[in-house]
Length: 589
Image (cartoon, rainbow, N blue to C red; front, side, top):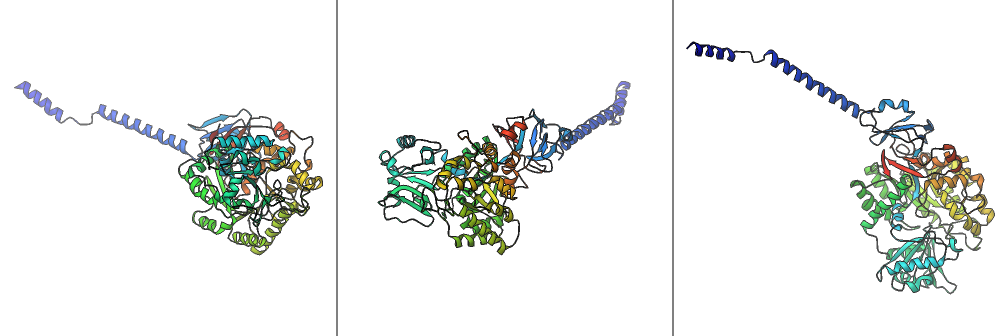
C-alpha cells in the first residue's frame, strides 16, 4: 500500500510538475534564437541580392567607349536586370558586387555600345537569305548558271525569286529576259537589283502581269523596252508594282523564319537595334510593313522570340493609321518594338539611273532621273503627318531630289512651327553645293550608308562624270561640319549588315581594289563614325533615352571587339565582333 501510495504520490507530483522545465525552456530559447538568426540572414541576403545597388553582371578590365560625352571612356560596367547600373572605374563599382554577381574580365578588350543600323529592310533581307542569292556575281555566265540551278530544284509554274545582282560588276550591261528565257520556260522569275529600285522579270512573268509592247510607263517608273518597243524584262521603281501583285504572298511562317535569320546575322555583326523600313516599294501603297508588324513582330514579341530591338517606319500614305496606333499604345510597344514614323520616296537610285539630278546622266544625256512621288501629294502628306507629331523620313539620292526635300521640309517647318521633329533624309548620297550646310541649318538628319560608297565609285564616275562625283558624293565631313547629325546604316540587303566595315569605310573611303581614297577630305574620325552608329543613330529615331550609349539607366546592349589597342582601332578601323550582349545577356556567339 505504501509503495502504491508513494507511487501514486509520485505520480501525482509528476502530474503537477511545471510544464516548462529549465531544460525545455532553454531548448525553446535556442530554437527561437536560431530561427530568428536564419530569418535575419535570409532577409539580409535577399536585401543584399535584390537591392538596387547589387549588380547581376560586372564587366571589368575593358576599354569602354561609351558614346556619352559626360564620360567618354571607362574600364567597367555594372548591369542589373538588363539595365546599366553604373559605369566607371572598377573601384567605383566594387560596392555593387554582391552574392551571385558575375564578373567578366575582358583583359583590355574594347567595348562599344550595341550598334544601331539606322536603315535596313530586316524581313526583306531575311527572305533574301532564303531565296536565290546573286550578290557579288561578276560574270553574266555565272548569273545565268545560278538561275538555271534554281530552276532545276523547282516545280513548273512556281516562282523563282531572288536578288542582289549588280550589272556594274560585269561591265555595266544590263541583263534582259532573253538571257534567261530559254532556261525558265515554265517558271515565272523576278530578280531584284541590289539597290531594290530595278528588277528583272522573264517573259513568263511579264505575260502573267500583262506587261506588253503597249504597256505605258506608270508615274514614277519605267518599263524598259527595246528600240522596237518590246519590254526587256527590266522594271524600274514604281513600274515594279505592275508585277509584284502577281507574286504569291509569302507565308507567315516564311516571314517569321526570315526575322529569326536576319536577327541572328545582325547579332553576329554587333547590331542590337535596327530601323526597319519594311518591304514596300518606291511609289507603292502596299502596306507590307503593317502585315509584318502584326503577323511577325508582335507574334515574336508575345512569344519571347525577339532577339534585337526594332524601330519600324511605315508608308507615309498610312500616317493616320500609325497615329491611331500610337495614340492607343504609344511609340514603345515594348522594350523590343518601337513605332518610329513614316517614310516616302522622292527619287530612285544611281545604279538604276533613276536618282533625280539637276544635270543629266553622262551615259544617258536625256535622262535626269525619276521623281517617283508627286510633289503636291508628298507635301500634303508630310505636312499632315508632321502636324500630328509623327516623324517623317524621305528617300533622296540625287542632288535635285535632296534640294527638293530640303525645300519641302523648310516649308513644312515654317507652317507647323518650330519643335523637336527630327526630319530625316534617307541616303543623301549626292548633294548640290550648299546643300550640306542646309542640313545643319534646318536640323535635318542625314541617314547615310557608308558602304554604298564602295559600290558607287566606278558607277558614279561613269554616270555623273568625274567632277560631279568628286564634288558632291558622300559628304560625311561636310555634313558634320554643318552641325548636321549623321546616322549610319547599311540599307541591307542592298549592302551587308557590317557596322565595323561601315566605320572603316567612313574613316578611309577606300577599298582594297582602289589605289586612292574617294574624296579623302570627307573622311571622319573613328569617334564620329562610332557615334553615327550609336548615340546619333539613337537620336535619329527618338530612342536616345533607351539605347545608343553605355550610360546608367539605359538598356545594357554592348559589343566586345576583338582588339585591345585603341590606337590601332582609331587609325585603321580594323576589328571584328567577339561578343554581343543584349540586356546584359550574351547572345553571340
